[in-house]
Length: 388
Ligand SMILES: [Ca+2]
Image (cartoon, protein in one colour):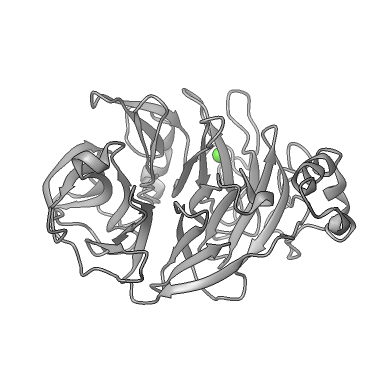
């Protein structure tokens, strides 16, 4: 398909690409996944998994900006173009566009940094330029155990500390397992703040994803006034969320068990099925529950992977700088060790490409910069720029 379209370079390339995609031309190309699935489950609709493969035609470059980050978990662009980056053990760094990486910024509460815990996501306040306030998610550590918490604090004028850190929300109850904290943050269109949580992985906590009164396995909406409400339920471990730049829809990635990683379009009040329905199996190979993949009243994933990508942070690409990427979803893969680029039309994935497949890096989070580039951090401490 890509070769066929090669002659259409110029102003019409983007339009023609969209037309050819709408016409289903991609269906001729094999999916990027060639391995055997872990399960014999069948998708609910065509393209729900193993969408047609695609490949970027436009030129882009990949740069490693630094390898000196210490277990980074999240990054976000500040209004002045700098990148703010959290580090799992409880510090933040600033990366200046001239290449300078700040020292470790402190001032956070004690975090449970073992396992999957730590200082996790960050999100600048919408009035950051004036207020210097940032929102954070973290695995709060107490004598009773840990939980996913959301707080906010102000970046000090000398940029060495976060001041006046205050916890705004706790995904109760406390529990003594360092896994499945979820923790991605996103702004809703009305100024509400979304935070994702996880089921805390244990057999004894898993079912709490279906209990609206528990903080586990949810996407929570915090109103601008600070009221917390369950926005969606039935999630296993949501480590990626992104708002579509045009439609303002909330999308989420979710870690499945063995198979069954998901991309979901998040709608208020909906039940996303875990642990009742899943396209994955237990790590032991046994089926999850009754081995169901669909049930009335539970949402189907827009897309799923088997074998898994282990999807973490993700971002839509809003810039026109690489026109064929505009509005595509880019998902960082941990176990998959690549970035998955998904082309979405009318709520369906119509193409998938693997980027940075040969870097041997676990891609933890992605964000779009102000310069039309995507930035990504990896568990190995790297910051990548992928762009024009
Ligand atoms: Ca699901």
